[in-house]
Image (cartoon, rainbow, N blue to C red; front, side, top):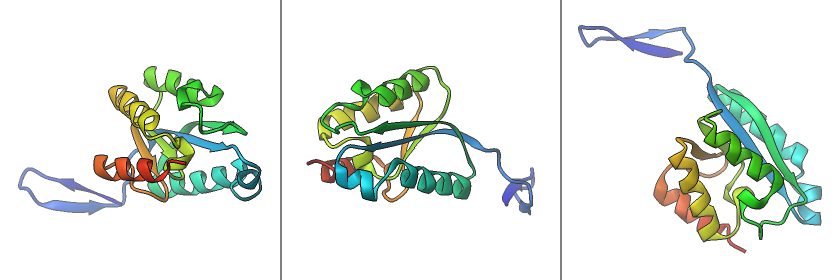
Length: 145
């Protein structure tokens, strides 16, 4: 449900859904425990659920399976592809479960998030608020190894 505002400044509720926002979904696993508990498939299920709840349309999935967080996201195969598509303007948000899926090195993650912002792309978390700059910095700090 959305609302419209008329010239008289009165707001009316409508049953018209707002248009879907185009996003990318990113996930990563690296350790054996993550492969068991936080599988790519489990991440995909949660990302799909969040996309449906927020009326997002997923442009594509970018999953780095078995790739260490020691590598900056732009040096991971799917992370590199994600940034190419972000630069090409194919989506407006990157959805991750939480900050540590994006990266565990604070400086690398902040640089990567800043680069996404330059492309007009926001980093959005399912379990953590990553849209607010302060909260993004805090969650990326806590995601460090």
